[in-house]
Length: 119
Image (cartoon, rainbow, N blue to C red):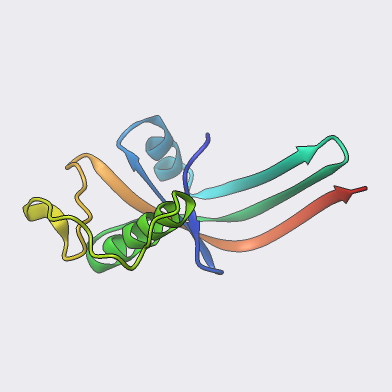
């Protein structure tokens, strides 16, 4: 299932509302993660990584959410170091507000492999 993610060199971080994706990873925490980048039929990269799903809470969840927000800010051309706009009481000190049924998780990577083609 597609996800938005951030990578810190050891783990993939993601977030999701409670649903099928989270139920599947909770029941089977040994997961596979694939990333593809295709610029053309002869110009592509693909990585497959295996790891273990962990649901995060407290400071670990806030750290993961901050990594995700920083990545998206960079992709949108925003300054990830700019102070966030004020939010509600669930802001966690960094402006990150999450719905009650949303979860932050990480996949701690154990193995990865990749292939590419460039012409």
